[in-house]
Amino acid sequence: MARIRTRHRSGPTTTRGSHPAVVVTAEYDPLRDEGEAYADKLHAAGVPVTTVRYDGMIHGFVSMPMLFAEGDQAMREIAQTLRTHVGKRGAP
Picture 1 (spheres, helix red, strand yellow):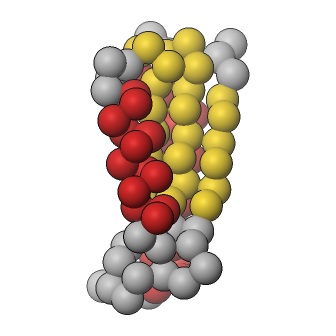
Picture 2: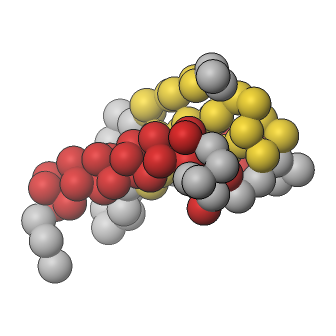
C-alpha cells in the first residue's frame, strides 16, 4: 500500500474571492513537481490549499479505481475537502 503524505495549509488571511484548492499528485507522475509548485504558489497568495501526494502512484491513478484502490481514496478526500469548503462558503 502506498504511503500518503498530506499537507493542509492556509495563509494567515485568505485572498478575497479566492476559492480553496485541493491538489493531488502522484509520486511517479512527470507533472508532480509542477502540481506541488502550483500548490505552493496558491499558499503564498493566501489561498487555503490541501496538497496530497500519493506515493507509489502514477499519473491518472485517480481515474483508475479498478486498478488502484488509492484512486477511490483520493476521490473521497477530494469530495470531503470540497464538502467542507462549500459548507463554509455556502452553496451557490
